[in-house]
Amino acid sequence: MRRRPIAFMFWGMQTQWPTMGRHLLTLAPFKDSIGKSAAILSDRGVDLMEIVTSADASVFDDIVHMSTSITAMQIALVDTLAAYDIIPDVIMGISLGELGSAYADGCLSREEALVSSYWWAKCVQDINPPRGKLAIVGEAR
Image (cartoon, rainbow, N blue to C red; front, side):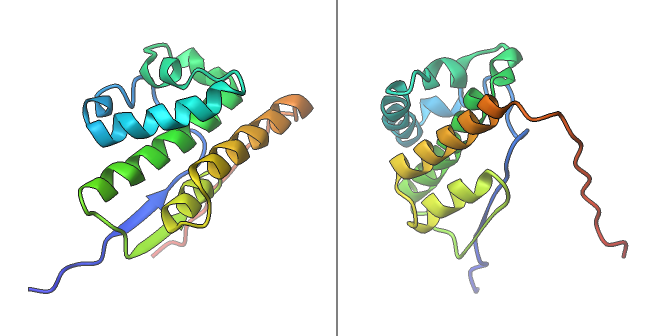
């Protein structure tokens, strides 16, 4: 029987929810990856462990927390799946998910992906753009 291709799809903002990583921290590869990312982000004042384990959804009101935690979770998922020999044949990313995608493909290191995520969010936070709307329209079939 032929193996079906494996695809990783990385989404962007608004894909987080409180405690999304809490149970995954029981997996050693996931916990190790989050720890490595937390060390990188701590230099920038981001407490990744608090964000990943917080039950309070308001932790994501801070765009830096939202952005960096999504990127760190994506990296940790890639690392965890790789530890179980699950390697993608296809990698796709949209918006912030392009950083997770670039990490999965080996184009960006952990630090490059996390620092890019941090500075993207920091710039958005600092310029404080007016709130807008996004519409995604699909083709009717």
